[in-house]
Length: 384
Image 1 (cartoon, rainbow, N blue to C red):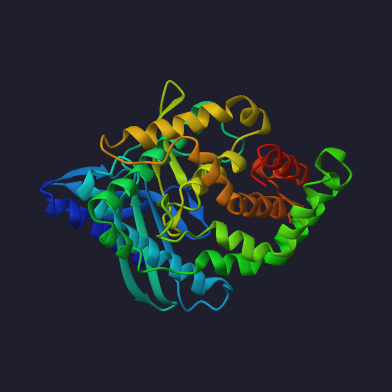
Image 2: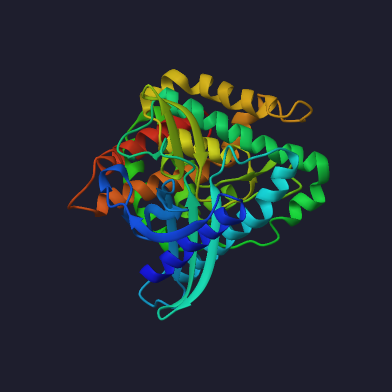
């Protein structure tokens, strides 16, 4: 695998050479093992810097993240799904991004991307390399809920990305729809794998609501959701192109899949990573998943309306001539996608419930009580 990563890093240097950067020579891929900053060894990749020479001067690249997967490794139950997701991500960067760039450059929202595929002794391995565009771009430690400054930046950026869908539909909707004719069923596969565990988590979290008179009328609806969990959640993750407000959505939009840039410790810019689950969906899915997975209840109480305003302002103003839904439509679209948010929060709570040793700070937040409060909030906002 080390040789494979080095080969891919050398491809990166070759790309720079073609851009006229000078006489470049690859030296090595230097892995960064700084676990505290969420950089180093990962379950599906490594982070580090590419060391190379320009003429005789030693240089290093910006931080990059290399993801890889062996398609013939029998140790991984989810391997076929993971491979399909990687292939989808390659398709997104090589087919979808160029089309969106034809509308207006979108590179300010998405990291530069290189990929390579090579046969190894372990099987056919796919590698994906992200160029993190500079040392100022950092991943979140994922150890706390996000404050308003981070959430506002994220909703404005995803609103900007969603605006590209309306511009694309206006320019050539048929071509836009063809871009995702290459699809995978990775989300459905994941739901099938974890359905039993998610339903058990929901059952535990429903118990306090059964004992609360304020929510007695909502309990039958929630119990029906548990009984039809797979169908309910799958509906949230898909959207027919006949739907007036469909967009190309990320479908896994949370703090673990973004990079922030800071000035004086405040987030000022952001890039979105990990597009392997991108699909046509209701425009509410990315918004509702973020606001329930990464915002505290206090922040939702204090900033919900302002965050929806932030999102809508970006959606409406990114393209001057875009025809976008009215502001009143946004909560309705979020309601269509509420099952996706429920899947995400129950997955996290289940992970925390099962893990008894070495819990990090984030997992102590993902309790059954946290999910119960989220269900109450969804009911209170008429999302459930």
